[in-house]
Length: 116
Length: 111
Image (cartoon, each protein chain N blue to C red):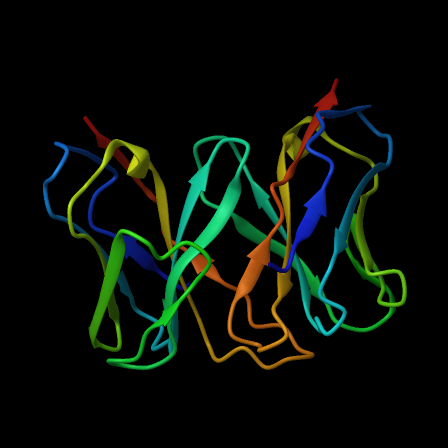
């Protein structure tokens, strides 16, 4: 079974802190993704990466950055946490997505971040 | 901004009935479509995917795709209380790089 592990289930941080959310996958997936999920807004893509040291902005990258130094690890960084970044953060991974075919995302358990 | 639209619900059906969940998408170039189920407090898990027009069946689940109408649906036959969850429709963007999710439809199956 694919395992996507997020380092923390719950985090509480103060406004202005630098926050690191870590994600590790064990299936040698090329693609990794960070989403946030908010009530009424659904899942929104923050950043994704399709190779080591590669990154692409998703729909809502403002206030975030990412790091992918190793294939299995994808980190989301909140440079200066703000209260509007309080959310559920979900990491996912997959093999290369071939248009016209499946290549499902496998999600981690999520990190619920509260910024006070 | 490419969009994926779902009725938020809640959709309520009695046990044993057919639940029909619908999704429309705006990107005509989309080629792959996914249905995920998410239980409260849990992560999304894949139910099935479809990329050809028509129906695809997997057990009690049937996905239906109509690219001309930009419409994809999920039918759940013989609905069970354990099917009560939020169902997320996801569409692969035209660049083929990431999934765009709808906001989800909450299904409630009463026994």
